[in-house]
Image (cartoon, rainbow, N blue to C red; front, side, top):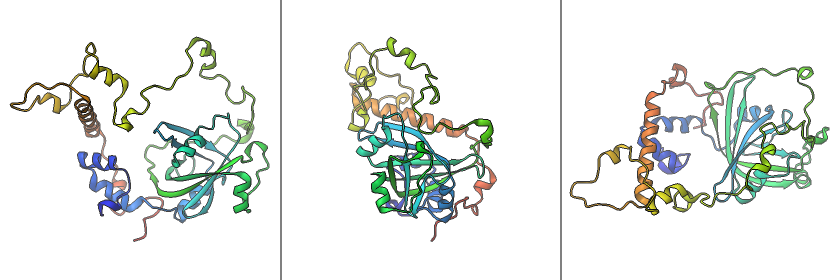
Length: 305
């Protein structure tokens, strides 16, 4: 597989090379990663009642959330496009706000009850008002439940679609409707939405106003976390302890004394992180025989040659 054709990020490719998993990753890319939704994926999407959504703003600040609806609330418009409705919520509009700055998103659908399998969908999003969406797709159903009537729609241009394996997905059972009670779609009733379950509102008078950290995403602009900057540039603060193999090896022969700077600390932290990754992977249990079988092509089928 040519380098430019490989799915995934430069970062994952570098870690694969460091940890010796490139061949295994290429097998997964070649067998499982599609740039569209095949027929089995479309059928899977059409019967789901929930999914997990990941977005980020233009700075890289991330948000993950949950979406749910009746089966079919996610519409498969064609093999490269899907759409989901945005119902009435808490008014924060975190996901839509992120999409307005950064259209990239990730969707994770997991079937906990029937197939016990997951589907990743990554792509580019666009936000439309309900009336605008229906002007282009007049066959969209109108939900009879007021709290499930879309205010907005998000359309997703599929760029990657691939399986999430079954081995760690728990098998759950749905509670009959008469036992769980009616869901309060679109309610503004505080108690029915969960009240102050985590006690955040009770603490509101005891904490200072919320403030986004001043060092927000410095790593994306070539800088460092505020704590590390303090360690480098304040005389009274010690540098992080050197624990990686590179640090233990000491300075090169003949090298004079070095003054720690940003690049030194970044290099040290990256080396330490990869050391820890290698230690974790060394303790990992080997995969099962089914997944190691070269003939195994997963639940969603193999990409056409």
